[in-house]
Image 1 (spheres, rainbow, N blue to C red):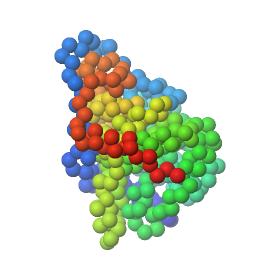
Image 2: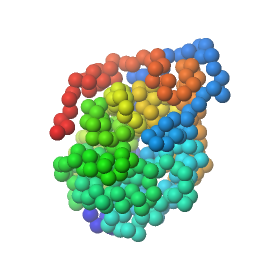
Image 3: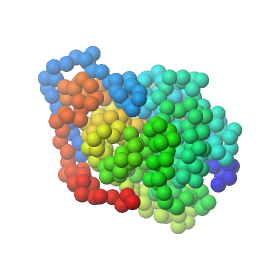
Length: 360
């Protein structure tokens, strides 16, 4: 794919996520199937609630991160720098978009550099598994070091790849596990694996953990449909295929519940985390952190950093409110709080416990 087409794709993604119809209707993430049990006498004051959370080798003030969205075009650099500053101010982690474009156009590296503005933010780089395989370990390590990242996110997006128009698509999904194992060693374990809106199953998380992967972002069905994003960019049969598969994958609540049962793995829940109440449900299902992207991007593009900060404030206040009303003082205790789980989510979880996964 040429540099020009890569930049155009990045611009399309920003525009579609800002104003396009790229979300799914209803409750595809299945968070309506989770209800936290109310405690009428919680025996705490709001001052007792402490949101600080361990995330791999870091401690965050809030159990949340803005997940990777963009990089490449000049305005992507503005977005990354401003949102990274907000993450540092709020004690959250920040993820960058795919760095693949840096390899073909080194001048775009500045759009990924946020350290001068946010020197202490917990920063995650980003590269697709197919690109990591094809570029090689040394190139991925160089991409990681050039932006001074704390961790590298390896994203998995086979469904998205199969819908991308023409020459952009890469339908070769071989050697993924071997690639990840090499990168775990080369990056001294500073690596997470994330999906892009189709979810990870617990069995896959377990397999990744056996390779040394310490954290995952389940990124399930429930938020932005990146399949739909690519369908809106495609034409003909390819577009029709995208709309047919736009809700493909594992609901975020089910992916979170399944991954959260894998002992010792750090779990980020993303995909449909639009408010603090939903974030608290994800934490109750076993997530260590929640991730969100499009709501804060839309607010930023419409109202600037002030608008993005209001989205963050609302998320934090919602988590605190759910914790107060369940009598919990730290996020990790939410997973032990009494909750009702509906039959559809329970059925998903039971099915995922039975599947061994086709993981090699």
